[in-house]
Image 1 (cartoon, rainbow, N blue to C red):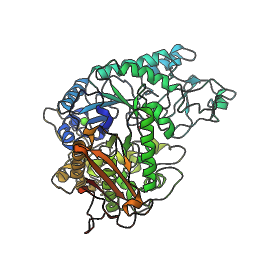
Image 2 (image 1 turned 120 degrees about the vertical axis):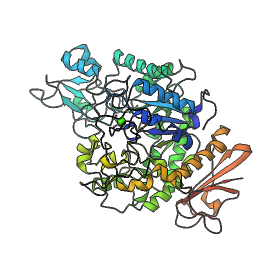
Image 3 (image 1 turned 30 degrees about the vertical axis):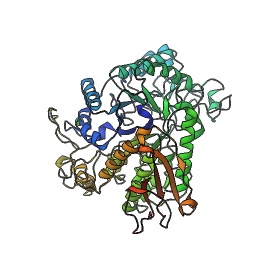
Image 4 (image 1 turned 45 degrees about the vertical axis):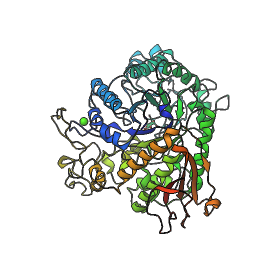
Length: 587
Ligand code: GLC
Ligand code: CA
């Protein structure tokens, strides 16, 4: 936990906790997590030792994409609370030294957004349509989409409206893409940034930051559909013009004291990440290479080297992410067979597609690796983003019945491949083992939400219960009982206790130095095989040095010099570090 709330560089080495609000905690018993639910857990988050929370969208939404289809960027979904509740959340977080980051979704709105409703009503050729990307179709009667672009969720990226025009949506059809060349669009989002900054929000997470600028005019649309513009660049993703937008946002961030912070979600090649992270633009960018990596030392080594190089070039700090609301939870990923694949998470997604039946998920192994991964991640310079429930060691819920899924990816596809979608990491959190539900009649491995919800829908003092109490919006498996926060709080060997301990050590020893340097310790010097370890040293408090060693190999690795601070599992009797184990030493 950082001490100076007003320091302008608080984010440089922050631990940021991602809250997916609809699944975090439900204060009024309607089955949907809400803002008062987050308020009720601020003490828990403070005890965990996080510096900031990032809230995934809580705005009014029809939930065509888990809230990333925003109807009104400057309000709270009535099912989640009110702006007054939000103000209380900011106050409660700030009172314990926790910063608040909100999610901005600028690439697309909901189709129920005022702008889109106006565009539909005004008809072809109208100024209101200019705020989106409407085009006539091909074919004799315009019955074919303008080109062959595909949506990230599968199917055509174009949808036809009643009057015959087509609009572009890179995600679900309910998420029309905005035209960022339009001054109204730019003004609308600057207004939104100021709205939240004025309410005390400390920073922003920018959704699909690499898609806003598009080239739709340099060649006929049909030709652009083949993937290259006249300038040889991709017409849709990671275009250079996007940076001008973020330079103008930087001017907005700098109107505040301290300047507001932003982090870009930009799935771009590592060499381009730095432009988004520049101090003239958003300031930080997610490095997803950790989240993509298999359990292999060489994958992590490359990810770390690229992350550090990007930070140096941008003048920012690196970010490390193992899980978020878009990827299968990492203890499951690490417990599945590790095979090289064409695209990241191919095996995990295949396992999910078949409801967890195809490969063995070795949970003991996955948990052991997840603990080791945490020591690696928390030892690194820069910011760490953790996803709700990862501190409980939650595994992916692979068996959710298909008719209970919410993610549009499940009904469509992702990038042309059939997938089960992202609901398995979005199941409402287990807070209390004693509120254990009875087995559900429809599948006895799940809880019957009407009889209990592991404390997810527990009453909160001062919050009126809804008239119609209901089950959690996604079903909770009965094995969640073993992961409930209250059970783990009482167990010093639990994942939660481990997270608390490691976060405390990090803020005590590493964060205060402000020194972001890292020195690799080569495997040979440690007596390890090549590619067996990730090992590095960092300067730490009191002029000492912290060494972090993670063993990915099959044989023990001798401990380096220094005093053992913390280990992710038992060390060998002679102090050496076993397979899938990490340890910190100080000297
Ligand atoms: C981002 C979000 C993801 C969402 C997509 C479209 O990638 O993280 O959840 O589906 O944007 O908004
Ligand atoms: Ca609720």
